[in-house]
Length: 226
Image 1 (tube, rainbow, N blue to C red):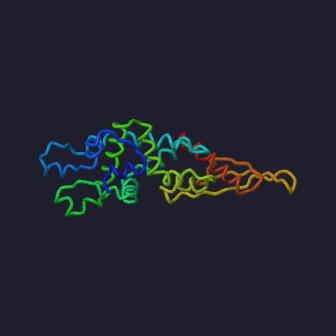
Image 2: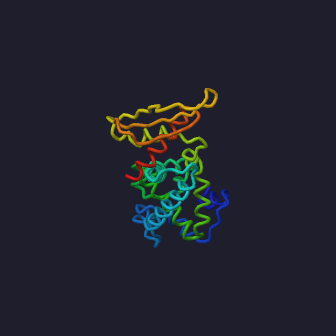
Image 3: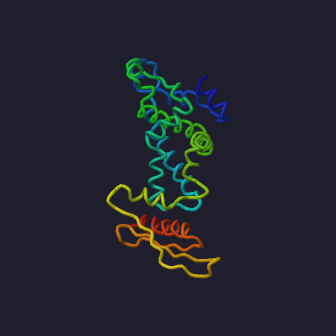
């Protein structure tokens, strides 16, 4: 199988085969083969920019909306070296990588840094060859499951708030029920969420659990503005 049969399988068109091929050409291969072909470093630069705006747009469209701070964190996770390398391994894209003999012997074909850069170059090549629409189509094919892990129908704001503040393990989060109003068959709970004793958010709902989630959402939105 070649990268072009892979693209055909996923119904991704291409015109400039040399450009696509260059995306999978590591500098170590170029150094050993003086055939005029360039390496993938410049394409990597373009692909990185495409991935940044792609992930930003996909995260922006998540409903309910993510606070800016979480969007930034999630984007960093989605386009991290480790995450991109995982996508490469999932689809065996590193099988198409051209490496120098020395780099091959030292495990370069499975090294996160090399194959993540290769993935960025691949996206950059498709973008330059076919434009944004096709590049996004390819990214949706390859990264939809990773996006889906974030775009959940029921978004757990309590967990996300915990993640947001977990950088400092000394901080504690407490949910305090302020009031319960209305009849027993239709109560309305009001909850405050406190971080180290300071109130950061409020939430109301017909169940205590949902009120806590609403309070966490309120706190996340306020923290993102700090």
